[in-house]
Length: 133
Image: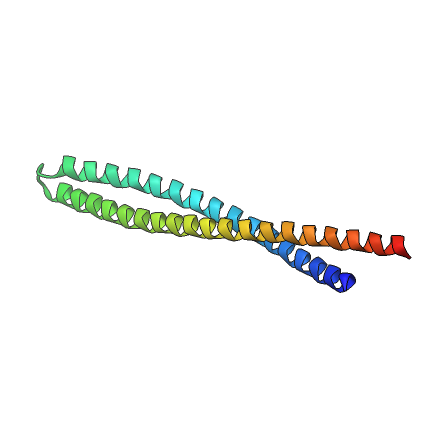
């Protein structure tokens, strides 16, 4: 009957609306995390470049202290490179999460529209029955 269908559609609509809200929050979180990781990776790439330049500038000058400074600069370069790669991986993962959530969101929004249309149909049937009675 139409009232059973209406109750079912209300339930489906409610579930879809909750899912839409959760997906929007997931998209916002993924976007924020992606931007933060990208920014951090960019800063680390700058430090890596500076450390590489420092090592190149100090290399070949000679002396024990300078050799230690060159090693330190090379270690800094390597550490920054590794950390930047980790941040870039995080940014890629979050971009993927965002894309998946956006695709799911589109489907849930379609579900919301379909449920609303079905509910409107049930309301029209209900009005028709009331007119007959």
